[in-house]
Length: 53
Image 1 (cartoon, rainbow, N blue to C red):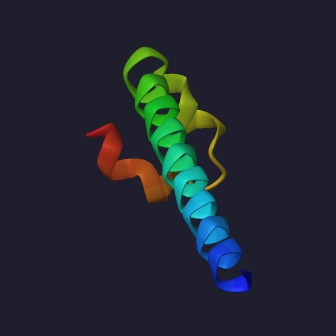
Image 2: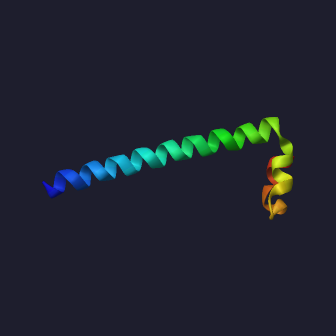
Image 3: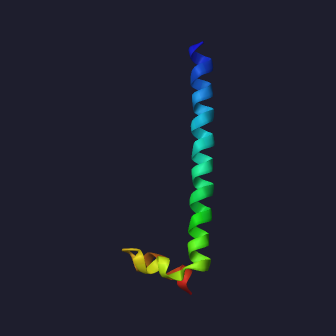
């Protein structure tokens, strides 16, 4: 019983993690292509200088 619960919980966590990653990447690239000012709001702009080229 416990084993089944933990496996199901792990699957749900993995699914949530993948969904979150996809949503984050989608929003990130949407900002990158549609609103380049996204990079000006970053504290470490040097970190994103490669994307600005």
